Amino acid sequence: MGTPEVAICGIGAVTGYGWGRERLWEGLLSGKPAATLVGGYGVDRTESAWLARVPDGGDPGDGTSRFSRAVRAAAREAIGDAEGRGWRPGARVGVLHAVVGGDIDEWQQFLTVDRGHRRVRDFPAMMSSTPVSNIMREFGFHGPALNVSAMCASGNAGLLTAKSWLDQGIADDVVVVATDLSLSPEIVEHFVRLGVAVTDAPPLSACRPFQEGSRGFGMGEASVALVLSRRASRPYTEVLGGAVSHDAHHAVSIDPQPSRLFGCFREALADAGVEPGRVRYLNAHGPGTAQCSRAETAVLDELLPPAARVYSVKPLTGHCQGAAAAVEIAVAALGYDGGVLPAPPVLGGGHRQLLRGPVRVEGGVTVKSSLGMGGHNTVVVLAPPSSRPVDD
Image 1 (tube, rainbow, N blue to C red):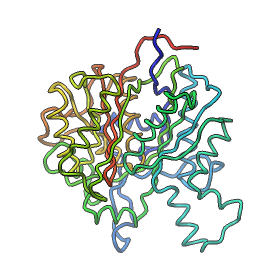
Image 2: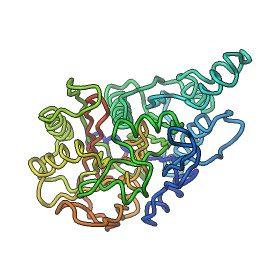
Image 3: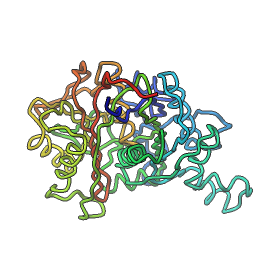
């Protein structure tokens, strides 16, 4: 009997659709973007912007900011979900937080409103390590605990780091949380000025991955948690392998000769023991920018089989930055479980392998790519759960 694959057995989500995994799933199946028009943006703060912003909510006991409440709500939901699917924590449960900017709201409050003055007992809430420590303390976990940051590829990088902990015996189970609630007017403005974010048009009109006429991505927020284990009786999806690399080319742009990206795909498939011809779905980074579309289209055309289908949910969820990959991994996992891939509607022409709205899942391997600004390449290989017995 072989060792069971590492699998995702619990999911928790806080997104622009609302608080909870079911809100995310229902929103995706509706085909309607999570973004709404939000006031107070633009250079003079008098404009409205299309943003998939996490609404107020959560438990006030989890902190004063949306960030702190979202992290703990997502983790709590994922852990409860995993336990409902047959998971029981081992002796060494690790927690890994994929995060880029941290609690932006808390730092802005501290620097601009509090003027650097705050009660000593409230000061630790701003530290990037505090959310991880709070989860460890709430559940009595004693495994490894740390943060991972790789810009927009952070969720993939976090998942692969967690898998390495399990493969090396450093932890028995790992809770991966990826969080980005950073849509302050200042940050949104700079992504617009970089020429990649679009806030002046509805998402399905502006963000068209693998289609003509795409202007870039709409921006989103999320906190998503995933429980990884080999010991759950009803997992969502198996994590077969993956790879991480870096272009070492530019602080923002993708290398126009995407050899490192191609190499990352090949290494991920080799690590997973999967031939390229077995890939059924490419769950793409797909932000709708010209550079990313060009690079991932080349992978689709030159490496993956003609039968593979590609989709990106960023037109629906928004680009959730440091949490983007985790949102999209959760979508693939929920798709295997529910038998439907909630691909967004396509408004015009597109790549011949592009999914055009929700479709029935036909099984097979999913390759999840995520590219981080600055040259981060990450690829994760997922598959439906197998029927192999789970060790006690």
